[in-house]
Length: 314
Image (cartoon, rainbow, N blue to C red; front, top):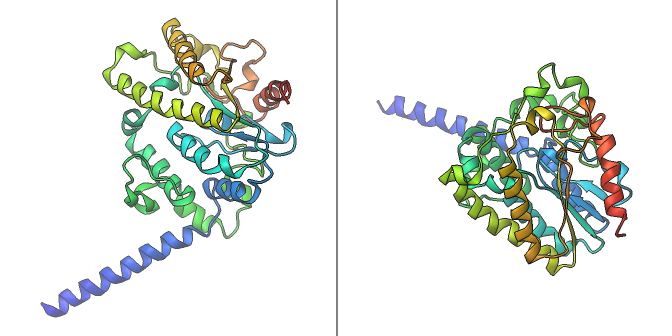
């Protein structure tokens, strides 16, 4: 019996050593989180324009078209909570920073802690990667999310062994200035116009969404207050969406979006908001799916429009 228990103990120790070694080896393999964190650390003294937010900007703002000192730090699936953490960490370390660009659209006032917990496996990945490579815990500070083996579906095995032969951009999934590379026109599929169609729920339809709304009032209010305190230009953009998605967005959702932005402008009158949701300049070839522009044509069309907005005040 003692011999059997000893073998179990030895086996458990070996498994634990392999587990820890695997997690530590992953730290040496580049990914989009570690790359963007490293870029911010290396270039924080040079940046003039910082793009935050989720995939709506990560996929379609090509910072090579915005001029020197611009970087796309947006991440797919990122909660605005992480935008606030990043902004508070770096805004005092970026002496040349003049402008922060973030997405805001018809349902952002509903996104929050409860909403993300409904999609637990996917959200665990975001919690894990933001903790392990960006250094940000979530609201509850759960450090056990650090393990990719236990929490992430970010293809850690493929990254680890792919690092032996894949180019850097395949590992980071973004170019040198941060635009994501996986949302191209050629890879969108024939059913792109029905992918990721938005929910039709408005604020008053759901108690859960109402709680999310209250969380987001606090987070967005702090973002606009931090920007005002540091005399930082803050630009919110509502990105274009295809007509199949626009048909599902109600007038009430648009009204609630505008009411939310108006509330934020009372805290920071200099907040700028530009609504491109139904902009007719964006056509079928510009989209990756029903609610995202692609990085092929969409990015080349939208980024110059954003540059005109930014340059109008510089």
